[in-house]
Amino acid sequence: MDEDIVTAGIIVIGNEILSGRTQDTNLQFIAKHLVGMGVSIREAQVVPDVKSVIVTTVNDYRSRFNYVLTTGGIGPTHDDITTDCIAAAFNVDVVVNADIEKRIRSRPAPDAVLASRLRMARVPEGATLIDNPTGGPQGFSLDNVYVMAGIPLVMQAMLSTIVLSGGAIVRSRSVTAHLGESEIADDLSAIQEAYPRIDLGSYPFYRNDIYGTSLVMRSTDESALDSALEELCAVITKRGQTPLDIERG
Image (cartoon, rainbow, N blue to C red; front, side, top):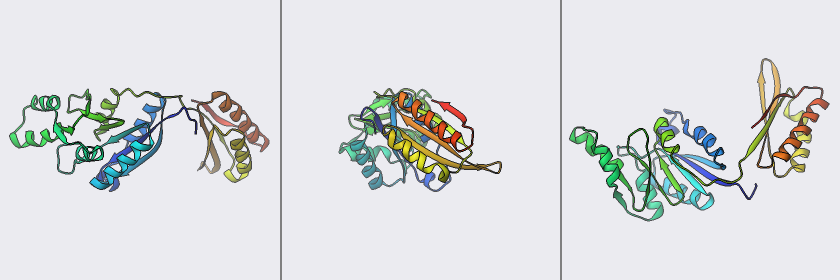
């Protein structure tokens, strides 16, 4: 991969995702958002509400990627353990943040409800707050780890306030061929070998009784992308088909 690419790892936290009860949409949103900043997601994991798993994953990711973003597990219930896990990963204490506490107390609620909500005022010592434009409790960051809510609307609001220092932006080129992967496998290998800075992927499909392959290339080198796209189109034409749905992103 290109050395000038800034990387990120995403950790989606929650038993509800793994059980299938809740469908995660946060990963796709984060990926699209980070691309515009010049940050490329290298890995993503969905992990359960298990402290040892979360701590291990956070420490692994923060050592290998420029940024780590987590979603989920910072709510008011007993199984919202992300804050404690991040503190354990950094070997720091959990403290009550006065700014978050003030925001929570500004919304009147019965004592029992308020007590539950105040769990969300707990953050690892030394953390910096991530604003929450929806008006609810804030997220937080510690070093290169950014911790956000799991509720999509809230996560998106928090993410909109985070500014990351990105690198070269990864661009893409794509084309569709009404050809099976096996028909052009050798050609794809040759193009990939000729353009090592490009990530060339092939994705087969079957629709309207037609087999085909979507070909997608990604790289920070737009000149190489354009040249490789031209060669791909020539391969498709040579095989008696017309290159379709050409896109440049």
